[in-house]
Image (cartoon, rainbow, N blue to C red; front, side, top):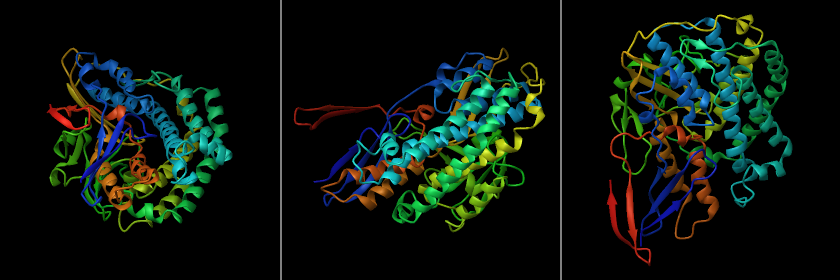
Length: 473
């Protein structure tokens, strides 16, 4: 008879989720769904707080990517003040975001995902983790730890602490980079660059032995969204929004982030606390799109640095038009690490990083504003409405992981259909389904801000496990 397989919890991700796989009578996969089972209501309990507190409050959404919320929130507050922040403040914010990209991507690749394709899919789960990676390849594991440490050190040298730095503020930043911080960051750039190149060489070799994963790990046409610079260069802090399709064709360009409600809708499914954004002109669910490293590299014409530009050229040969395999999020992540290290190297000796002109002062000049930045996992929107006293009346956060929700569900279904054939299902096959989610590096603590009908299901089970009653709200 038809049955259901549950993967609960999904391991080696940030947050709590499960996957359900539905089989027919013959043991074939009919459908698979990704369920986010935690709920956090930051949008609501920020209401009636002063907008100036938001760069301090919203980063508490997450300990992995607090810098992303810090910068998106500060940009929203800049817009409420209607000010252009000092050039030094923008450069310093950019440097901190580069550090955030490095540390978060290093965590995702080396600690969460590498055990699968370095140790092997069939490795016992008790060894298929970061400790197993340390035992099998201590040099690679140590290099990954130190690479993440470098990114965290950039954040700490600028903001005073690695996690939740109270640094970016409405109108600018609090402090500049001092001489000691500059010298320390500069001294570690060669090692960080070497590790990024080592990781890229390692992963490119693995592509030759992972052709099946390359083809079925979320390999489908979709739209891609992200920020780009005016000349098409990779962008992570500012710029305008661009959509491209699966063929690499630009279908919407130079979109004003303030107008995002005109082209991004948010749908609430009953099976998850995670909302499902979509591209409005194509409707739901036809307007499926992806964000994050894979999307940003599909959008960009160049990375803006020599080594990363060379890698981008190789990356783009892996697709017809756009690169559509979600397995290649890992490759894109490594290219972004390399680009971030190179960009820090380019700017580290800029004397403006030590300027004392760091903040523009003003009162409230707008009652509504949107701040957009690229988090490691993708485009991040902060949208605030305030009253005349600066108290938040309404807040909407559109998180990268939510924007990937439709794509993640399609990915787990595609992988399940390829690898799972009942009635006996080995654990390594289920791990491949989990790995499809890990490719997106979801941050579920950031993303669960459901609006509308919440996905609350209560089931009453009898002693034999049969469902006696079910209530849905």
